[in-house]
Length: 84
Figure 1 (cartoon, one colour):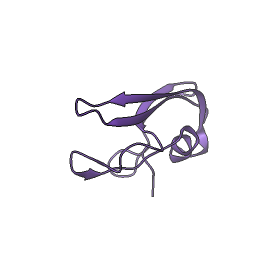
Figure 2: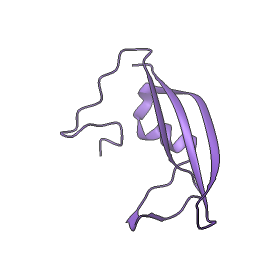
Figure 3: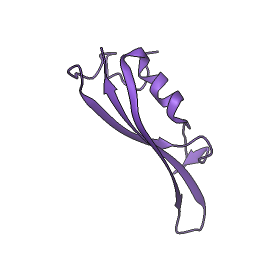
Figure 4: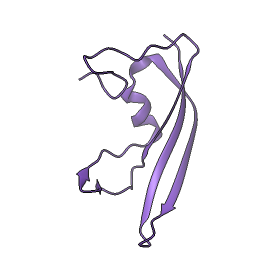
């Protein structure tokens, strides 16, 4: 499994050493489904692990979003640096 850092065909997204990736996803206590689709929840360390050993976590922010229906959805945002 090439993980979420892969492009179609299994190729890794092109980044120069020192380049940054900013990604947001549902947090570990986020919903199990969104718009009827099953989702995967991540904490910052698990999200970094999806990118393999070539990325360093620079910053992680966790946010609680409240939907118009009053439900809480937890998100995680991470800044990663490509280390090669």
